[in-house]
Image 1 (cartoon, helix red, strand yellow):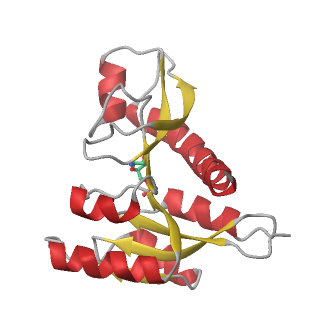
Image 2: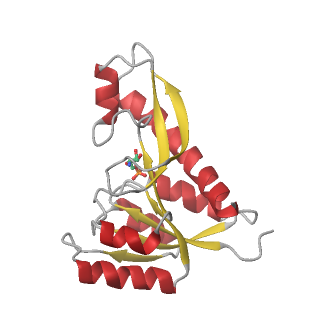
Length: 189
Ligand code: GRF
């Protein structure tokens, strides 16, 4: 059993399957982290409901997220002793100013085998390029979109008859498995 779990914040914008996977894992006695804060830039993000159901503090940030608000949030998270920030479908680019508060402490999950297919519509582009494999990548967040140091990847096969939906579902299933495992490892190291 872990005596003191490390505090984690998760940033979301939408449905929150990765958030849920992180929470489910954190509820295990043997897990070394706890989701202490969930931040969303969308007030209607379904993931917020998941957080509330699990009695996790939530906060909605403004669309503009100006420097003053960034500083305020950074201070809150530092005071809460947040050791890592996990971006999980967070559709907003964090400024270098905010990143500076958490050097090497912000990670993201991306639905492609980086460095291939940075940005949006990764599955569509992988299918159109007739790739044999796709997958997901967990990486540190840097100033450049989807370009920080890679921590872990999971390959997923693309089948000839794959549709966008099928591929997205197959990759998401792996994302949901990979993120909690990688976070536990990071916390341990
Ligand atoms: C995931 O595919 C993640 O890789 C990408 O956005 C999606 C978020 O899904 N960055 P969810 O909100 O965690 O279900």
